[in-house]
Length: 169
Image 1 (cartoon, rainbow, N blue to C red):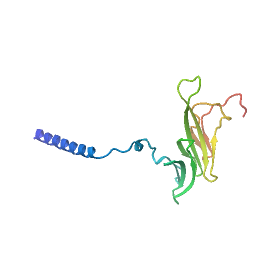
Image 2 (image 1 turned 90 degrees about the horizontal axis):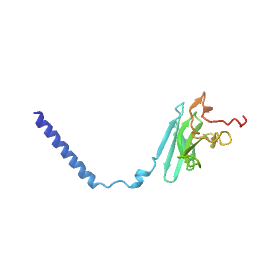
Image 3 (image 1 turned 60 degrees about the horizontal axis):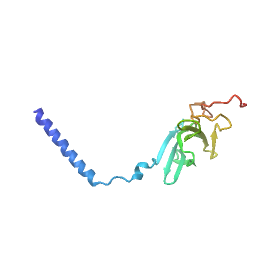
Image 4 (image 1 turned 120 degrees about the vertical axis):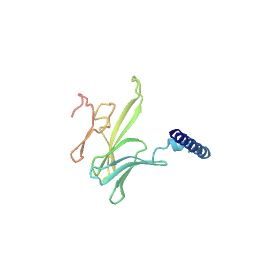
């Protein structure tokens, strides 16, 4: 009885595989652009209060980060990020968004790529974008732009940075 049942299951699987193969043979494969295109919406992050959401929107030539009010469905602000290429987004409060970026650069005398990062603050109420920890503040180093913590109400963030002893506070 078990032998007959297993033969029936095997024949059913072969029949199903044959029909799926014939369907796949008649359908056209997707274009190459479908595999290389970035997702339309990515890097979604929710504010600590749960009232706002930020995300990266990629459509055609547009590459921007938008902040959306969930109650009114209104876009509170957007900023083009074509040149920054964000790797991570963080809404530290309902008004401030931090975008961490990273780029790979070749530096003379160093074997392999050097990953330089930066963090940008976007304040939705003012519509302004500014870089945090600029080059004049710290020595050039790998891993900059990473946010490791948020203090209190989100007005201060913790970021690793090496401060040169020759610099003044």
